[in-house]
Length: 229
Image 1 (tube, one colour):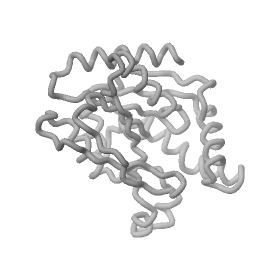
Image 2 (cartoon, rainbow, N blue to C red):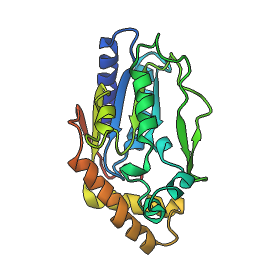
Image 3 (cartoon, rainbow, N blue to C red):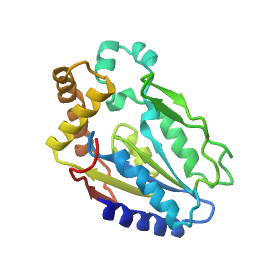
Image 4 (spheres, rainbow, N blue to C red):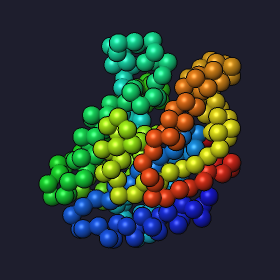
């Protein structure tokens, strides 16, 4: 897996050097739940920055920050369904995410000098503002998340803004096992049985959805079993 990450880092740096000096390179990292998106994304940022001589030009942002809050889910037409399906595409604030990406896609000289973005607090189970904004020095922005390469329902506008689209593939059973273990550790459900029920009724469906409705990736990485959850 390390070799794949190192090769990806080299290709990202090459793509960055091909961009006009006043433009950011935008990179999506997508894949089904349990594929290891964040496990790949953050080491990838470190390798990219190392290749750039230690500059902190690359940064990773998680799509999780654009989850609707639980209070916003309460105001949906079917709040019970919205809470149960939290993590499905309709439970994300697509307009806000799209606006953020459109700002990133502007020439840096025309974009706001400080771009705030949300993060997700797993203890609170809700999004929070990031303590630090995205700055002009951040020239390579990786966005990891389930729907960053989705090609329908308005998400295609976002995927189309990406210079590179990295798809992290994983077999279904490995993904299921990882997500059950992760959700149990996070306290999302109180028992193994409840975790499995939720994963089978939500996460696995979301995984099939993104597989069937993804924009063509520029790169495919195959997740291997030694990846942590």
